[in-house]
Image (cartoon, rainbow, N blue to C red; front, side, top):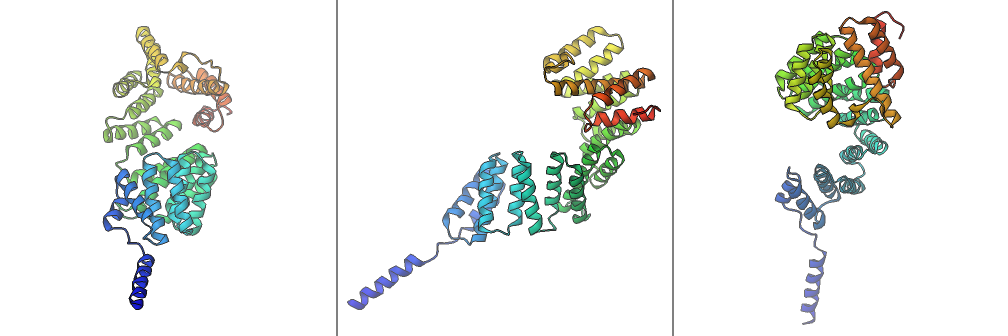
Length: 372
């Protein structure tokens, strides 16, 4: 009887020490699935089950963080990613995703720190370079941004169109083009957007952005050609119609400009700037009733169009800058050179030196033989 008692005790001891069962395949599939709520529930079961290795538990935290992030719950996503990193300190993708989430929250310094750690752990992680470049660009550090985008492009060789690395390459060219434009290097900006278009000719937004850079150079024919293609690719793009209307206006083709502004308004009737643009052209044509109707609607939609004066000095300066530059472009297209020079000089004086209008105003002055 004594021996039997000891055997029962040993069996009981063995039962207590046995490891918990690993999570089911179904839970892992749901945890890594596309439905955020199902994913969170399944990942939570895996995490709470305590039957996984530290590395697998870190993966479950990472997957749950992805779902929290998709729902806009950035704090919970960051908490999960921090736990994933604690469980697996060499988890480069967890650092990368936490960097993405910090940038979503506007915490650029922490985002850059996490991207940098992800790169240290995985120097070939092209996406981390691309996203760190975006964070630097957000901070106005365009040189560091361009360096990171260039490295992302180097690491993401051109592969078949469906390969995810090709998407990173395209994004890096797109982002680097924007950074070059911010530095006023429009030729390089256009070259990068041209590469995006070569890699993905179906992306209408790349045509729209390249058109903007052409327009800033005064190359309205190429801008219009790009916008024609953008509208063909996306006939419901109110932005493309508005921008083509601006290009036509700068060429002095007021009727086509008004037609495009009208198309933009039909697609997106609540954009004040487009009503303002059309109203100013009606005013030039002497169609005062239509001009008043459009300008009144612009003011109703956005009171900043009521006057150039504003209590906010920074906002007022921005409004005066834009008004001077775009009025100068219109004067130039209507062969009023002296008025155009006067307005471009105002823009060069009033605009902040990191906005497109400042670069473009100085370029126009130089093209007119004036000292910028």
